[in-house]
Image (cartoon, rainbow, N blue to C red; front, top):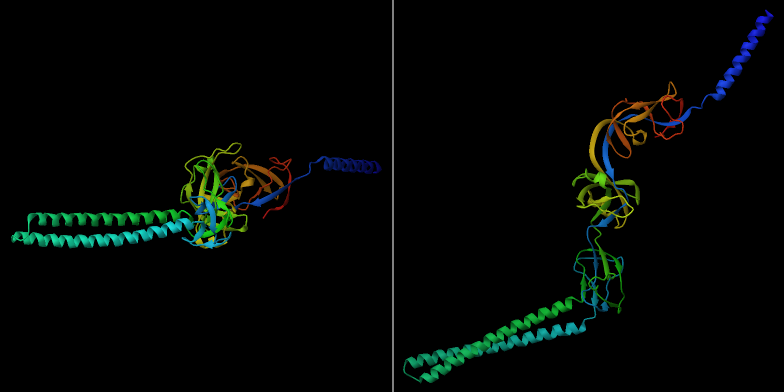
Length: 383
């Protein structure tokens, strides 16, 4: 009996030591973060590779067509102006005086033309009377010829005076055109973004081939769009009219509805950067314009296709587009499963086959030690 108890004690001791050794040498379960397989709306989207920019539908960097001293500057930076408002005027008193002179010369020419034409009319009537008298054998042929010639001469003077009047009117147009070149007029309504120059300073237009700062930078503030670069690989699937979602750093929790309005007809090849195609997205709701400023950074997500009811998992859980790790809470292990994927975007990927709703997939697939069949412990479900 004692021998039996002694052997039993030895067996228990050996078993305990073996268990302790096994427990020490057993690998620790890999801690994983899991997400459930869900059902809902799935979209295939593409997005810009670098930050896009909110741009005004119209922006004009304006300069006067002639150089000179600034005589009037009725605007300040930040002012809102209407189409046709004066932005800047070069000193132009000499040109204004030339316009007044041309107008007065035109008035004098009209008066002279009127006098010449009245004289021509009187001469024509006198010639007619002389001709009638000659038919009655009153007067001489010389007198009749002289009267007719005088009438024609005065009529020619009348026509010359009228032509002179037209020339004077043309001089007025030339003077007005010269005067208008000294005035910078707003081509559309907007906000004055920048003014280069002060009152009494000299401004000069840009010579051919030489870039100089514009005198006034005018930005339309009631119409905006987003310009953003799309990777050349994704650009082939984008079409004008596709729905887009626009997000701005200035409004982190807000998304703006938009539409693709233009795709650049060429690929932009910039050194040390991926080749991209610029796209433009318009805002669907003009009511959004009141919150926007030209120059905001923006991202554009273009919806290529959509499915209202599909199974999906986080895109980060998919390995090489065809595998996922499925976590079994009962067995506390992970298993690598082959799947067939469908629509996908940066956030979620549709699962066509291979998974069922409610299964849990591992999202931290780069976890060291993660492999098919290893023991795992869930570190919690990521929301």
